[in-house]
Length: 609
Image (cartoon, rainbow, N blue to C red):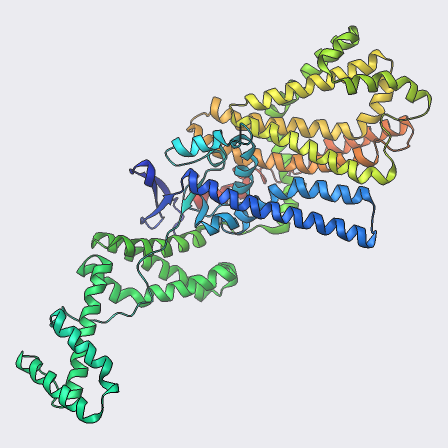
């Protein structure tokens, strides 16, 4: 089986009907109509209505369940609602696009589909990238001016998320050619329209006539047609039935030529239609069960039929086939192409391998941009911290009144044996959930900001660094350094590391636009986006851990020394994991290097997702 890449070729067409053609490894072009901003926005509105309805329904169900049973606590209920409203909007689009063949319910309703720009089915990673970057496309919130402008003006109708993920949104349409239609081999019509209509009416009414009337009418019609030179059986009724069947077949053949576009294309349809129907039935089985679940003989049969149908598509183009015929063949060839060359799902084993080896090895490979992000975070933090420690009044220029009041109350709270914050045990689940949601959102913004040539990432890192440093400087100026660090350190070592990695992911994404190397900027954006989203996924994992610590350990009734020791142990485990894990299997998670990456490159020739 050929593993050459599909070459994406833009067809020259006006803005209102933009079309993209890809060349399959069999050297057959398959066309896609690109979706415009109107249909894409309508699909998003439908998805938004469905998503909002689900959120409201599930929230109401949780509230009623809690009220009826009293299971858990209000804090647990609140934590569940926070996680639901934060996580489901991301999960909705990533799940449907990544696992449902590129179609959310809204896209399916409007016959839209997300594919990779080589025509390949969208991968889970591609779905994650394009939806994480939605935060850029919706700007200025909620106008969608950035995304809508890109879709309208870009030659492939791609928004920012599509550019980074290497995806397209294509429009499917119904075809006027029916593969299941009956086909009769016959010549051109012999009767005129009036004669055929007279014969057709007799064939339709003959069963309602009595024997004498049928015999009289049949004799009259048969005499007329025989006189015109149409030979047949001696029995008048049988003669007319045979003449009608022959003429109906000839007219069906003429109608077929009108649908297929030429005599040669019609002949191709008559000759190959049964193969096409067989191919489609085998495809449906393979699509539902997966090629890996089929016996070898059936897989070989599918591959053989796919190549034969792809060749028939090329022949139909050569024969001047109609747009309806070509589109019908393009659809079934494209479906087979996507199934044949798509990557198989990797499952839990791959996810575990990514956690234990892939993510830390990727962090080490991109250590330069992660360290640079850390400098952008901690550099301004150090400057702001020293500045505020030397002159505490400057804190009012950098911090909100709430934070300044907390520092002023710190000494009194410490004398009374109170911690940095008071969180009742029953409220800890809600606090943890809210912290995770907030930190993940900040990290997503830092990651997505990288697509603006890294400027958004730099801004987020610097602003958060100033806030963090000013806070630390203010508390130190009040003599509350130990008081603050005993709260920050247990979770902060994980949280700040995660933010640095998220910033590094954003900078790596932005570097594709500033320093693309030998690749085009778009190609570099797609290639580096795969690694960047893998880093972002690891950040989510770390921030969940940090949120649990910040919700349950940091505000807990433990001695400050115990919290500091705990924070030190967490830091030791974290950096040992990042420094040592996965050294025996480098490059596993990057998607572009290592054994797994080489297999992907072999499959797509460097052009696929």
